[in-house]
Amino acid sequence: MSTVPVVEARQVVKRYGATVALDHADLTVLPGQTHALVGRNGAGKSTLVSVLTGLIGPDAGTVRLNGEPVPALADRDAWRSRVACVYQRSTIIPELSVAENLFLNRQETRGGLVRWAALRRSAAELLERWSVDVDVHRPARELSVEQRQFVEIARVLSFGARFVILDEPTAQLDGAAITRLFGHIAELQRQGVTFLFISHHLQEVYEICDTVTVYRDARHVLTAPVAELPKAGLVAAMTGENATVAEERPSSVRAGAGPLLRVDDLSLAPHYEAVSFDVAPERSSGWPGRAAAARPNSPRHWPGCASPPPGRSSSRAGGRGPATSRPRWPPGSVLSRKTATTRVSCRRCPLRTTPR
Image (tube, rainbow, N blue to C red; front, side, top):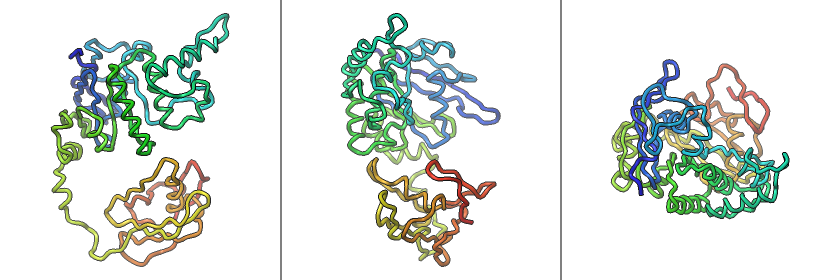
C-alpha cells in the first residue's frame, strides 16, 4: 500500500472576521486508516472538513490530496473524485427511489428520456460492489437511518473517491446498528477506502480507529496511535486540563442539596408512560434508549414548550428552596433560556411563552 498521505493539511489558517476558526492546523491521514478527529464543539473540526472537501478555501497553509495540490474550488467533479463527506444530517431525498438517489443528475438517457432499466441495473451493481443490501426500487423514505448512511457511502464512492469523511455517523443509531456500521467500515477498509471519523463518543474512537488527531481552540494539539494513548490522556488533550484535577475540583453545591429537576410519573400516550427521574446539580444526566424510543418528546414539557401532560415536574433553583410544580428554571441551568424575548420555537409545537 502507498505511503503517500491521502490527505495532508499543513499550517492551515481560516478566519471569519475577528474569529480564528483554524489556527495553523495540521492533519495527515495515511491510506487504509480509519483516522479519528476529535475535539470540543468549536475546536475547528467542521471548518477543517469544509476545507478538505473544497467548500471553502484556506486563508493560509496548504492542502494536498494523494500527494497532489487540491483542485480549484469551482471544479466540483475533481473534488468529488478525491474526497467525500457523509454528514450527520442525511442528504438522501425521501421522495425518490434508492436508484434515483444513487445517480441523481447522472441518469443514463436516450433521446432525452431516462433509461430506467439501465439506471436500476447500475444501482444494483453499485450496491453489490460495496456490500450494501438494499432494494434499489425501494422509496428512500422507507429506509432506516442506518440504510440511508450505507446508501450515501456507496453514492460518494461511485464518484471515485476513496477518502470518506464520516461526520458523527453514530449519532442517530442504536447499539446494534453501530456494530453493523463498524463492520461495514472495516470491510470497506479492506477494499482500499480510507476514513476520517468524527465523533464525540470517545469509546467509539478506541473501537474502530487506528490513529486519533485532537483539535482544541482551532489548533492541532496531537496525533497519536489510538493503542498508545490512554483515554485520560485523550480527554486531557481535548480539554486542556488534567482529568484527575477536574474530578477533584470543589463543588459549589451546598451539602444536602436536593435535585435540580424532579419528574414523577409523566405520561403522554402513545409516546411514553410513567417517566420518573431526578437531575442533580452539577451533573450531566444521560438519557439512553433505542432510536425509536420517545426520548425527544418528553423534554418539550419541561421548559414550557408544550402543555404538560398528566404527572408532576418540579425544580429547585440550584438545588435550594422549595419545589415548584411550575418551575422557574435557574439561571445557567440547561433548561434556562436567556433571550431578548419570552418565546421559544420548537419544530413540533407552536410558539409558546416560556416560564419566567
